[in-house]
Image (cartoon, rainbow, N blue to C red; front, side, top):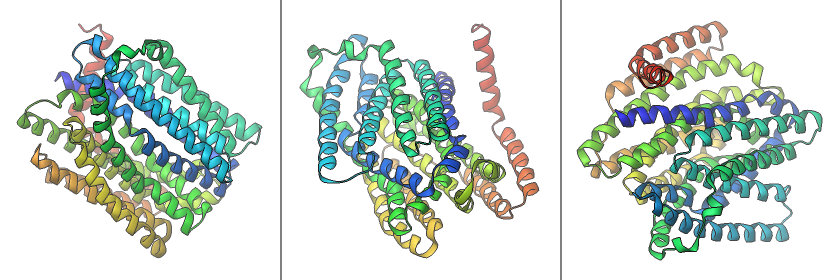
Length: 471
C-alpha cells in the first residue's frame, strides 16, 4: 500500500513537472503552424532526431545507471560514489560529443549547427540533473523547475516567432535558455558540482556503471530506429514538408507520451525499489501494474482520439491540416510504445538490461524494413502502420521473455475493453461528425470514471489526508 501511495504521489508531482510543462508547449501549436513553414518545421524535427541519435550513442544513458546505483546505496555517505564515477563517464561522453560536433562543422554545411550543439549540451545536462534530483528525493523541485523552464521557453517562443520573426532559430534559442534555467535551479539546491570529489573514485563502480548503462544505450539506439528513423524515412521519401505535417500528428499522440511520462518516472522509482524482492511477489505486483496501465491508456487513448477531432480545427492552421487523418492510428502507436517502455523499466529494475536491448533490436529491424515499404504504398499513414507492427513485436517479445524471470499475465478482459473502446473511437472519428465525437467523448469519460472509481477514491483520500496534516 505504501508503494502504491508513493506511486500516486510521485505521478502527481511528475504530472506537474513533465506533463503539464509539455502540455503548455502543445498548446503553442497554433503559433507553430501559423508562423513556421512545413519544410522548416520538418528540418527542425529531423535535426533533433539526428541529435537524439548522437546523444544516445555517446552518453550511453549514464543518467539511468547513476540513478539505479544510488538506490542500491544504503548509506547516504556513500551515494557520492555512483555520482562521481558516473560524472567521469558523462565527462568523457561530453568531450566526444564536442569533437563530433566540431568535425561536422568543419566538414559539412549544416544549418544552425551551433544552436543544435548547444541544445544537445543543455539536453544532456538537464537529463543528468533531473535524474539526480529524483534519485536524491527532490521530486518537487524537479517538478517546479520543469514548469518554470517550460514557461520561460514558451514565452521566448512567442516573442521569437510572433514579434521578432526568427523562425526555427527561436525554437532552438528558447529551448537552450529554458533548459539552462532548470539546470541552474537544480544545481543551486543540490550542489552536485560543488560536492564532486576524487575520493569517491572507484574503478569497480565505474566499470559496473558502464556495463549496466551500455545495454540501455544500445536499447535507446534501437529505440531511435523505432521512432527517429521514421522521421528520417519520411523526409527522404516524401520530403521535409511531409515530415513537418507528420510532426503535427505526432504532437497529438504525444499527449499519451506526456501522460505516460509521469507514470514512467514514478514507476521507475517504485520498480527499482522492488527490484530485489522474490519472484512470486514481483509477478503479482507487475501483473496488476501492467494491466492497470494498459486499461488506463487504452481507454484514455479512445477519449483522446475523439478530443483530438474536436480541438484540431482550433490548434492547426494552413497546410498542416492534412495531419488530421493520421492522428488516431498514431495515438494507438503511442499507447503501445508506453506499454513497451513500462515493461522495459521492469527489466531495468531486475538488472536484465540485455533483454531490453535484444527485444528492441528485433523490433527495430522490423521498423527499418516496414516503414519505407509501407510509405511507398500508403504515404504518411504507412509510416504509422510500420511503427505499429514494430512496437507490437517489441511488446510481445518482452512479455514472453520476461516469463523466465517474472511471470506477467495480460488479462483477456483488459484487452477486450481496450480493443472495443478503440474500435468505436476509430469509427466515430472517421465519421467526421462533430456531434458523434462529442457524444462518444462524454460516454468514454463516464465509462473511465466508473472503471477507475476505486483509484479515484484512493487519490482523493490521499489528498484529503495530506490537506488535513496526515491526521
